[in-house]
Length: 204
Image (tube, rainbow, N blue to C red; front, top):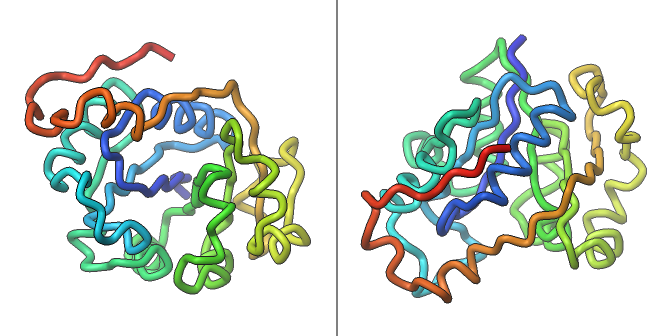
């Protein structure tokens, strides 16, 4: 069975923080690959005026992923799914010989209860939550964590995630990276107009 981590997001733009947590999760969870699901549109971010076109965001993800076992995809656009729960259910059906685990930062755990059928997500694949600076307290006190806490697994057992019964949650802590897509956009609002300008890729 192939072991794949799934990291969804706007990637507006992709940056070295995305790469760092993906490679760290790959090691901690024994993953064969991490797939970046570059969203065609985040329902929780509808109406934003600073969202770059999908093509530019995907290009930034492809540049940031190069030279690694990270695959940047726009698979949700191809599947025609808008919500994570629908994407995961389709992927599980399409790839029966693959075991998936959902990767997300603790900032997303803090608002996970706002996602459509978030309990359904937890019942479809295991979830690995990666600590992000400044979000630990709100994540631990979140509505979703109140329900997921009973399904938590210790980080020392992270390599065994394929044998866990669902729902299952593991909290992972890596070297913090404070890189922010918001800060990148603030410094360069027109970044997406230069998609052919290669983004520097750090060596982790």
